[in-house]
Image (cartoon, rainbow, N blue to C red; front, top):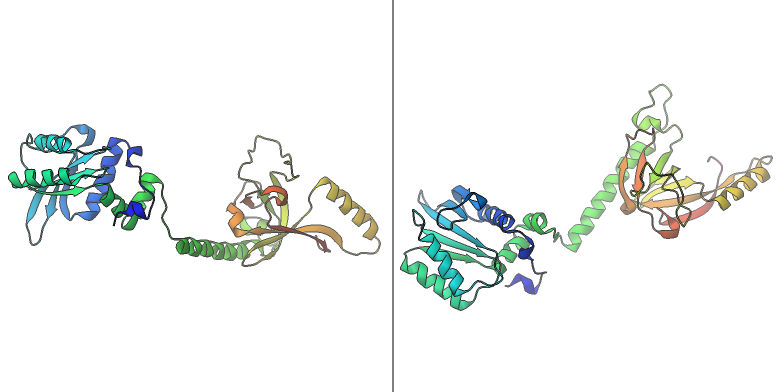
Length: 310
């Protein structure tokens, strides 16, 4: 099967020649059982040999293998003849010759390589672009990500990874955020939560800039207090916005004598919206780095509630 019919084509031309040779070394290391390998690269080579290895065969037998890496858009019969001729200049001929090329190779060129190598009593192999793509997509996906930045995890694997991340964050936050303050212990670590407060901060905030609100009224960082931690995320209580401050003050004035509760906001921060977190910040309170999304800022939803303990 040609993997390009079901997957995205790999752009080998994005790699410079030496980087492509590095990729070839990684694939050869995994695909061929060997006792020694030499990558000559820019150090110079012997008769056009890019990579040399000693392949271990069945029993105790071994064979010398020369590898030529060709980052070509087209590999013609003339190119093959030139490559094989350069091998003949080596001080020692190989038992096997491998061509690793970044393009498709025609049957005519393949037949020529076969006939020419047989005349020299040299076995051969051809790793054209389709084989390279198959190896990277279906056997060595870590190399695909390392060299081309392509992550081919399945949708199901991505969902499972997301679930595991949410579970881990939930358990961590319950342990760290919901502890009661113990006045007999030093104000360190989780015990800094005298009022169970922490900071929400956008990852884009720079400390040398003023803490000014964006177009929706959200500050780059502000304090909240956790109310509840569940499977979805963290619910927090907070005050927000100049207009809302007026409402708060009005509520306090109205209810000061009656002793009834005050109004505040309660927002939900989804675990998926938390980029990172820091329980050891210099400011003395943990920081949650959250993405801001328009009018709701870092929250998926916001409720106006009465909170007698805020």
